[in-house]
Image 1 (cartoon, rainbow, N blue to C red):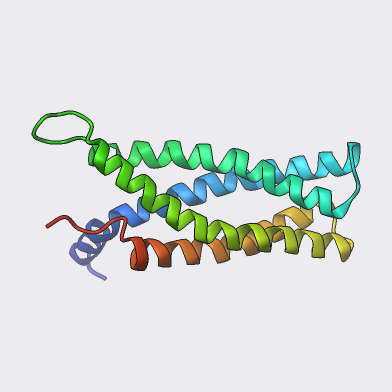
Image 2: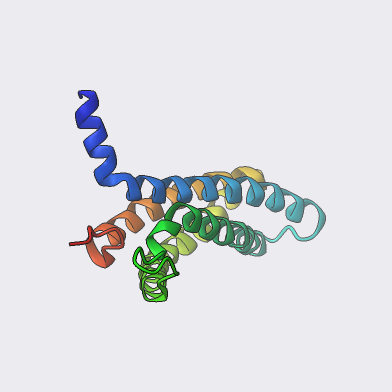
Length: 163
């Protein structure tokens, strides 16, 4: 692919690229935190596979959503400024929040169910808690990222070009 074509594709999909970058960064941070917390929880508090699976999920969400929200805002803050007044356009902010909520609601239901199920199954198979958490996160994240991209592009059209 020639540099000009690459630049055209990049500019066309820049918002989606940054969106996925934010998902991946937040996902990696929550992934590492959950793996460590899962091992510590299993070692020092409770060896229940169900409790450990749920704790891993809760810890991931406590890291993932605040970090994703912060990264997303910094990458997209230009979208929320009205060029004519220079002030924040709260209608655009509300619209994006609704679209993000819809997209994440759908993908996170799939993520939550698959994460807990896979963590539980890996623990049942004898994997160490941090390994079970990591393997389950990788599988659940893959499903979630594919689904959220489909929802963002096809259903809620978060990055639709302005006329």
